[in-house]
Length: 240
Image (cartoon, rainbow, N blue to C red; front, side):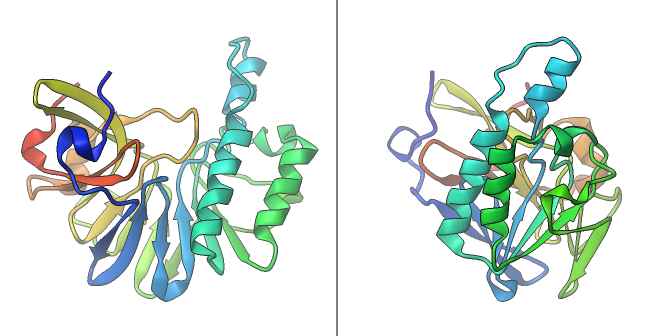
């Protein structure tokens, strides 16, 4: 299987890439998070914590390790950027019962990450209600320094928006190889973030569902790889 590595695909190896949305510099990280230096804020989308246990409740057995894996990756990213504020852009839990199914150990991990930081949960379609057990504050959307942070991107020519919900992924075809990975997608005026959750799936950025967001004006894609984050030319993208 092809691994997205610079020596294989001749891309510049970088753990992060500096992006711009409406003139505001933001760092996209290979973990799938974004760091906003001017606001000292770390953004993540679609953690889908307790997805495994949600499927177990419905009779579908999945490995019950998704929450711990996601939290450990998030902790590593927090250590890397040391933000003052963490903002989760919705669907942080796979369903409204996810908070109650969190183990005490995972609650303690969350509390450690929240210590001396502001933590904001933006609600999503999977978690329209978030219980007080996990700390932080809850809101439907957030406006900071002219940018609107929300879970579900609005259709049409919206600008100054950072959102999740879509779980963007890109399929790359190059040198006879093909690989499909989560990605950031944007156009300089809005950005849709990849899903951060360990068990979260992805929707191809060439799917018709992205057309109401970006139209025919072109998109920029940054793909999460094995060792970094890589800009991918649109001409290399392929449908599933």
